[in-house]
Length: 579
Image (tube, rainbow, N blue to C red; front, side, top):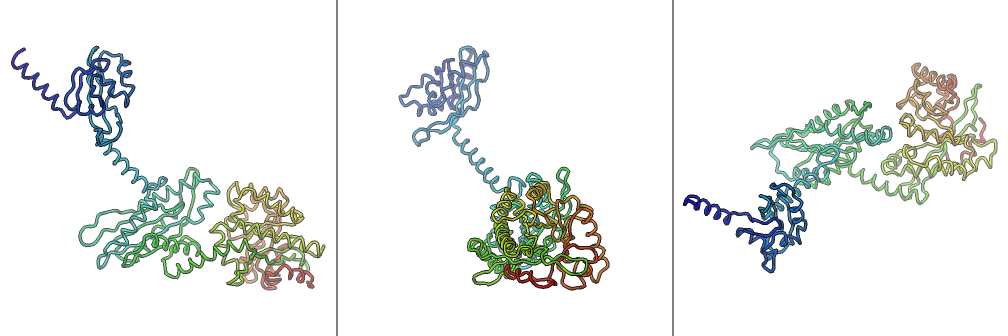
């Protein structure tokens, strides 16, 4: 061997011995023929007796398959494994926690092994993974918007940031889909989820994110999904305080455009609550709560609008929360009771039939506040999920009174009992069974009970229709309440499985002075009669109104002209009065 060759070989050996990785030459059975100092340092903690004769034996407790992996490798040369992670017992005196092994078959007799301390690499990977998981935990999985947790973090930063003297305002918009439950009930949750994704996309297109150079901050908007059908828009660096209102108005216009989900074209309306953030730090939870309160005010005013938060809204919300708690107790303590408004038959000679029927209406005798009307608590009951229990209790009480009247008055008792059916009840499984059980408990003939639903409920999907058909199968009569104010029309009346159409009071009120409304009443009566349906005119208050609806052929009437809602005991006296 020449001097140059000897020098090259010596250089190679020095490199191998100084290399920052463990290098080993092995026989096929794992016996170590040569190893560098790094290999010795990494392996020695794994061989307490100092025996480094065979790599496979040293690593057997941590990688028992290495010997078999090598023996099964058929080619004469090639890569057996690369970057094989070997986890070692943790401990300060035992060296690395993770090794990375590469094993190469050089020829029929030799292997080369490379070992690297991968502990720090694994720790780095774990940190990256933890960071990614933390980032994912701040995103809503459906819409990929910031979630509630992330929005609260950002909002807290907004509330605590020092403000510029002018042109540096911020606000929070709380956005809710009006009547979103109808979409889920009618088209299914999958369509509802797709609507949420499309809403998020429209919100995302309004987001303008940028840094804040010295001086005036750039406007920043962050969209987040903070609940099922609830979104928030965080607005920072606004030039004027009322800019948030202009953004809310723009959002209402954008969001009112149809959403295309498969074959369905859906039009949604939205309610928005706005909280302008004034100088001084506030808790993010409180700000978001106030924005939600303002949103509910907008929704209570009919939806498809925005409302700016005012302090009295919070006080009203507190009262409403107390009302909810009291209402739960009211159901258990029997504080709810029924009153009845007579429904009279309109006879051809102008007289009335007082025994045509009654409509049951719920009232609440609060132990402190006294008599509470339905307009004060029905909305609360719907929001907190109590309306179903209230509806069932009202039905039970009304059936009990009706059975008593029939037993005491015989032919002089009302022939029909009308009870309102809520959206929550229609969505409950087992509704038909519970109605049937209540009727049976009080000996009610099926044809003497009429359940009343609004147009918007009757026009919902196949599930509601099946529920209504199930009630009709019991022999129960169905009435379409407030006709003329909802989604249906005379042309679609034949699609609804109802027996009676109740013409809304808004038509009756103008019937004596408006030919247009008189014609609408006439058309409704004719279409209903052609379909074998009865008609009831609601809200009759004057003899003139009564004369008009009677002339148009309405079968029955209801309103203050005949009687206000009265107690069950007073009904008996009213029935005995001379018509």
